[in-house]
Image 1 (tube, rainbow, N blue to C red):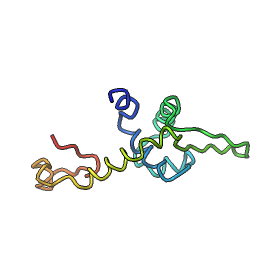
Image 2: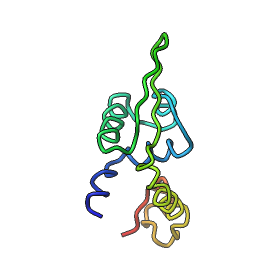
Image 3: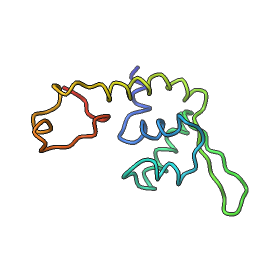
Image 4: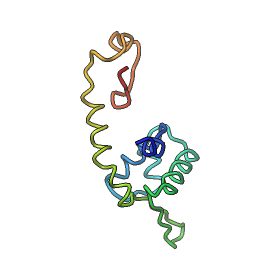
Length: 116
């Protein structure tokens, strides 16, 4: 379990994998789909996911060069886990939110909030 958490840890890997759940994506498509990620960070995270064999990178000999990313069959083994995490985020009971959030003083993306 620890190995799996190490492979998918960090702020950006789960959003990248979530975006790739629906099929192949080009680099720019991923960049547009994941708010606030920089091109440099996206490139680094995709490289890490590729090294861990969760994602494949395909380069097409076109002008300009086209690069597509997609989940490998091994990466697809995380489909259920990703769906459950998404569902957990959507079903988090509001009584678990911090007082600041309840009072409207703090905004947290519900899908990324983790109750303590």
